[in-house]
Image 1 (tube, one colour):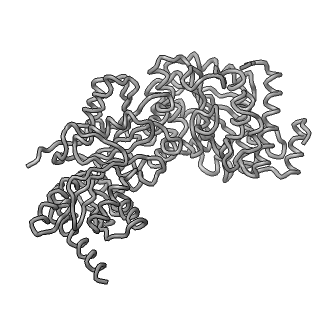
Image 2 (cartoon, one colour):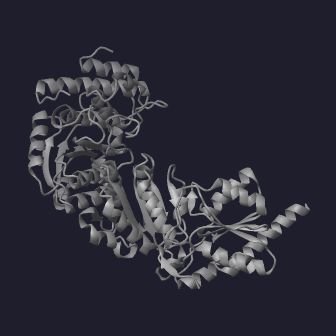
Length: 276
Length: 318
């Protein structure tokens, strides 16, 4: 599988992934565009640049692994998995349909490339810890990546897992926080404030870096820094824009879990330089 | 008097024994390793033991991740916390993706005694039975515990084994094996049959002996495999004795009694009396006091059997 860290190439891939995300959610008639669009640049950086992985690897082969703890970002994950050749692009239009391999939220047994089943918020980080512990036990020098939403950190289990990852000194774990500042009911700060979020992770014993989650250079630099920290888990605290890339979706809670109408899809695709 | 052995002791011993030959076995606990007896494994294989602190949800999630990474995790804590506090983690991270996690929960039922209802799990079997794909086991004694743990280590998929704190009378010997979906017909009965699990199996044997003296022929089936249940054996007992008593140290809602009643109602309706916790929180107290209070005694079970036989007669005379 071809990997690249060329920003021009990655931006073009991310543009196409945004098209795929919107097209598949429109076809499904439901889904979560806002958080998929805030996460996609990081997913492209991981799957097309940073991670050592590929659909040709067998289940037991060594590879980096990714856990989408904010499982509602499934369309973004499915888009990059199809891009990487884990399954044919024709599956994307079956998102959320009966007996599709692409469930509404990631389901490992049915979707090639999905390592961990998620969707119920707060549960992915613990499982990423488990994968990282298994790597350590087997002497594999690979990395486990995870991504959480900011609203998701309201779940108590996230903090149990934050505590145990630091306790077990999981230097082979790199977690992203997709800090797009919105959740279904509105601004995170209004619903249930999480600040000071960076200090909280630091206090739990994590190595914390704040970046712009849409800047490929910053994403790669943060991953490189995180890999050098071997005695504690790393949090890449990514400031992001919910709905990023589609002007009328940006920074609006409404687009957390609403599918675009055909008109809205066409408008969005036009903005992304794509014909409907 | 039968020899008394604690199920949890045999769990601790067996998982440590299995760990010697199977290097993929890992054990997790939530700050109760002394009580659950996972401390035996922890001492032998400290690098493969993870104390997760008082954080059951994280423990189940971490176990699921270890399983996804190719390990065979045994996760242990008290039954109320394993099944209750972490229910949704068990459902989402273990049951739904059919992850290879073994949940070995000790201190089930009321024989936890003095700790009181906060620590007495009367709902765990119901909670675990409701999860699709989950195998649910309540062994009758220490030997069946060892057999169930050995089977769970070899099987690929989610398993819940419910154990208890106190010592139970030994029913089987160390050649006992466990097969999912298979019960043990310990005694045949023409008038009524007990379908029992856990401590109730040995009590049912005593009750059957009492009934024998008054001319009632009572059978005893041990049903450690609550899910999948031994369909053929339950229906055979229903056909042969025409009346059943399901007995468990668990609520009458959702456990073995429910499983038996559901099966019989849909296939061969005969009277089924459920002996269990009567939809209530019990109390602190010595285990023997609580067993007495709940009717989990030979005389209590014999009474239930007489009622079942009475119901059968009423139905026949209609």
